[in-house]
Amino acid sequence: MKPFVVLAGISTCLIMLWSCAKETKTAQATQEILPVTQPIVIDTTYTQEYVASIASLQNVEVRSKIGGYIEAVLVDEGKPVRAGQTLFRLGSQAYRQELNKAQAILRSSQAEAKTLALEIKNTRLLVEQNVVSKSELDIVESKLETLKAKIEETESDVANAQLQLSLTEIKAPFSGVIGRIPNKTGSLVDEGTLLTTLSNNQDVFAYFNVTEKEYLDFTEQNEVGQRRPVKLLLANGQPYSQTGVIETVDSQFDKSTGTIAFRAKFPNPKQVLKNGASGKVQLTSTLKNALIVPQKSVFEVQDRNCVYVLEAGNKVSLRNVQILQRLPQLYVIASGLGTSDTILYEGIQRVVDGDSVSPKLMPMRQVMAGMGQK
Image (cartoon, rainbow, N blue to C red; front, side):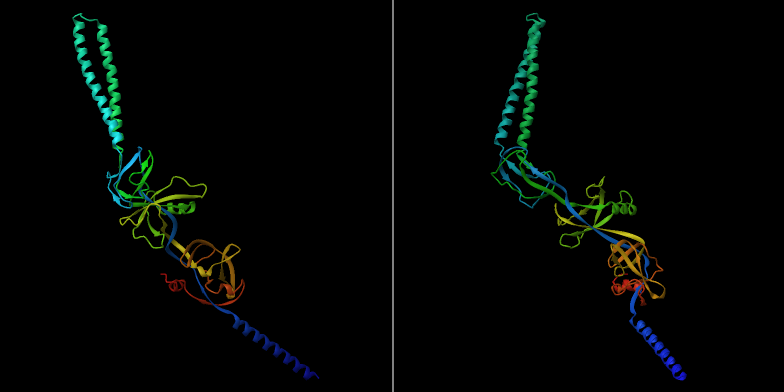
C-alpha cells in the first residue's frame, strides 16, 4: 500500500504544478498590451477665443435740430459721403423770413442810433452855449444807450436766425457710410427726429471680456501699453484677413460677471466689418516650460482629472493631476506629474486601478507627430 500512496501523492503534486503553470500562462496571456508615454517639457503657444462685438471707429445718429418738412434727400442708404457734405435739406422759407425780419429791425435800429448820435452832438453844443439845460443832453444820451442795448439784442436775433437757417441743411460731421433713411422727401420732422446714421468703418473696434485670471496672465506676459497683436474670427467661422492690436483695457471689473473689457482695433480697408457685427477675438500666448500629456491619457473621476501611472510590476495606479491649459489634443499639466513618470496613453477604459499591463512605450514626440504636431 505504501508505494501506491507515494505515487498518488506525486501525481497530485504534478497535477497541481501543471494547473498553476497553466493559470500563470493564462494570466500572462490576458495582460493587455497597451501604449504608454512619458510627459515632456516644451515651449508652446496656445490660442484663446473671446466673443467680441464690433463697433465703428465713429458711429453717430444724424438728427434734425429744427422742425420742418424734408425738402430734399441728397444721399442714398449705404453710400459713402464726405465730411461736410449736405445730406438733407429742410424747408427754409420760414427761417429765411425770420432772418430778413431780424436784419430789417437791426438796420432800422442802427439808423436810429446814427440819428441819436447826431442829436447828442448838436445838444452838447447847445448846452455849451447855455441854450438848453444839461438834462436835455442826459435824456438824449439815455435814449442812445437804450437803443444800443436794443441793437445788441437784435444782433443776437439775427445770429440766431442765421443759425436756424443754416440748420435747414444737415451736413455730414465726418466721412463715412450712410445708414437707413426712415424719412423721405416731404416728411414732416420735429426737432430731434432721427434722419439716418453715419458710420466711419475705416477702422473698427472689437470689444471682448476676459476673466480676472486671464487678465492677470495677460499682464504678466505684456508690458503696460504694449500693443498686443490679435486675430479675428468672423461670424461665418472664416478668419479675418487683417491683424488687429489690443489698444486699451477697461479701468475696472464688472462685478456681476467678474470680467474686464478689452478693446482691440482692426483696420477695415475693404469695409467688410460693420458697426454692430460680432465675431471672436483670437489671442495667442506663449507658454514656456510646459509639461504636456495627451488628452487621451486624462479622464475624470468624480470631478477630478486623473491619469494611470505605471508603477513597479507594470501595475497601473490612479493619480490626480491639475490641468493648467488645454491645447489641441494635449493638456498642459500644472501639478501631479513629472517627466520621469510613465502614463497610460490609450486603453484607459479597459483597466482599473491596480491592474497589470504589458506596456509598449511610445515617446511623446512620436505621439505628437501622430497628431500632426511638431
